[in-house]
Image (cartoon, rainbow, N blue to C red; front, side, top):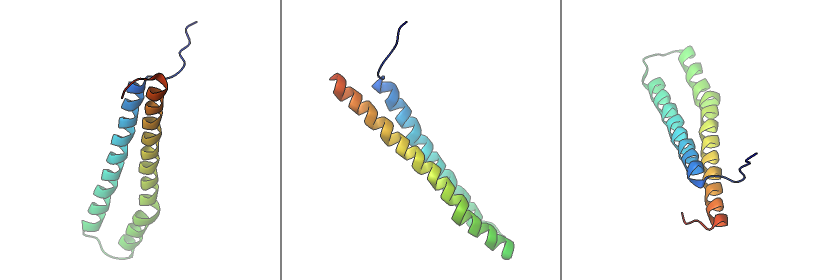
Length: 91
């Protein structure tokens, strides 16, 4: 049975880049939606309530997703670098 222990730093770097790309995409989507809400012709209490819900809880949850992806990027990139250092491989 062949058991692999460790990681391929290049593959983990690719994973880190994917996390970073998706974090940026999530942030961009949040900005697009906020912009569209802000420029939509709609007035009254329903709009105010909808906008407040978006600006508070909804946008906050999306920001948390982007932050989690950014943190995953940071961890993966650090792990790849640590693997390179432990293996004596230049980055």
